[in-house]
View 1 (spheres, helix red, strand yellow):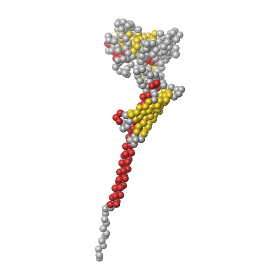
View 2 (cartoon, rainbow, N blue to C red):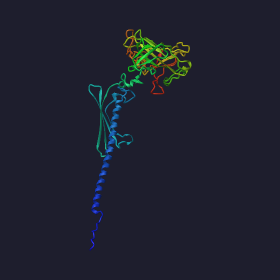
View 3 (cartoon, helix red, strand yellow):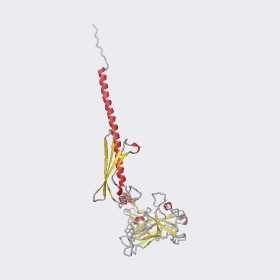
View 4 (cartoon, rainbow, N blue to C red):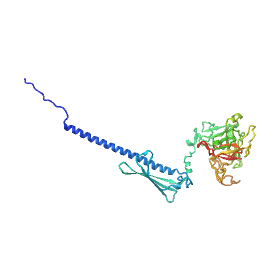
Length: 410
């Protein structure tokens, strides 16, 4: 039988197929190159827009941070009245961020009949494709004293920021929580008494040791520090007194209330009694006063120190080398009209409480400001030799510590 031969099969890629494949690949590569170019352009534009937004935001925030309403001599640009329109061209961000320069236009318009200015900040630049880009931020800035802004940070009664350890911040840390919403505190140096505080509001009741025979009162507490060295006390000394400490008179007379508002207003003040060796190792002692007001509207008056020496005799406040001078720590700065900061807010430790406003106290109107109706803490004193002057915070060692003092006694 004749043999049957199968046809041969030829395998491979024709030139036409190869050319078509190369063409498809070329179009794909062109597309990838185009995407990369677009991504680079968009990345640059995003970076530039972010930087422009930052510039506009910082410009507005800088205007909002004015520290004075009126112009301050020698301190340009810190007041509200200086907020005005301006143009800045060719601004280059640090480290050449965004690979471009910016033009900043600030437009300020006073709203008629108000104390407000409308501020519009426009930031312009040219992108990589030579196209003009713009970011605009608008805001309204009110002509309000900067100090009033601090009121926004004042915690409401009973808020977490007004508490310490789950209790009102004015309650002494040593007070024992009773588990019924109140805390019990026995002031050091006292006998047979106890003070009870509402954990939420800090409202205080002065009672006997059994919690009976209670009267409503307000707490005044602080520390009496001593810097009894021969050299004049300065800001650093006020922030870090060197001692040695002295005891205060036995309770309830560690401090005395002078010129009380209300004839029957009384202060019962206590401080722990330390030994001579303990005093030599310390620079201060703490005190606690329960002021019992004669009227529900509050109280006023001047709390004076009553330190004693080693023989338990009261020391003398005078300006002589053998006497002592009492200074109170306060945030107020004296002026020519008020050299001793007589009219400081009650919380800032004035010479006399309820003397917040200038004026002459009389028998019918012994207060020129608000009466004290709540607890006062951090009412601190510094005792120095009598011939020295009360130091200010100039030359202090820390901006976080208040070293401003004003003369209190004599």
